[in-house]
Length: 323
Image (cartoon, rainbow, N blue to C red; front, top):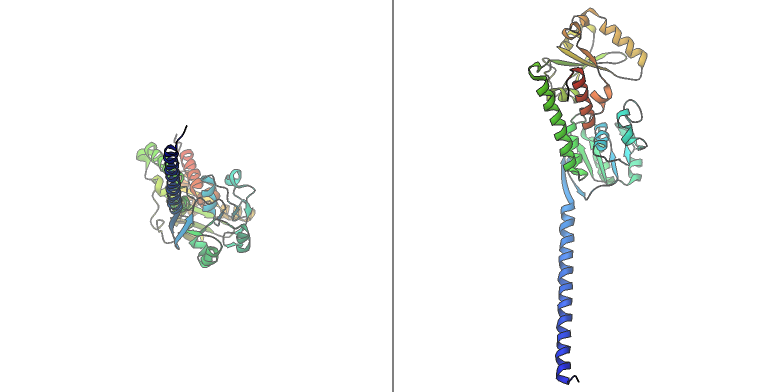
């Protein structure tokens, strides 16, 4: 038979156990709350970009990209944006990106995105570019956190800010490392053949151009090519050739050429007229059969890490280098 003294000690024991349990629950609750706060702080990061700093929380799910290099980079990172801008050619999306982005909603042109359509998408982040969108940065930022690339042709910058903004820095670093490894292999296989002086020409319906250190120029520089005197100007995109008398400005050991525009017949006429000219025929690259036709989409307009790698593909093929 249980006496009153035993009952007393049992009651005390139960009371202690209950109190300990309550304290543990409160402590656990405090720790859990602290953990959530820490996690929240870690999930909020500050991205530095061309227009300042932007805070982004977590991993954005709804992404809007407002220039071609950002469209390209999103595809490279395995991200399908909710909205993208229309391509310059091969409308509405460059062929090399269609497997990844076909069906994605188009929200206007790179130079004139549809702000109302973007707002309706309620994006988590907007990827824009200072070259194109500096004047509407405040409008975009009012819709969603916005980060801006420095220039449309600086694909490494685009890759970096998107890696940070999309919480995919590791993936972005891997893409850059893979590109750099391919470049190093190309240089190693080419050996003493490098450096090679290279010019980048472009024909349009009514004139010709030489591109300087934009997208293609920077990739060629990475790969070990040199640019003719004056073509290494990083402050200018290039020049329009005002007359055929300026053809010698394109002189180099090798010429990479792409044609631009939708006026196919006129472009072809301009190309034939200029390349049949005696001054063109006297260029070193022409005399040595070192003029190579390349795609505008990957050598100029694409502007992202995928396009850069497609350029490297072309270099491997043109110079018969095994990867």
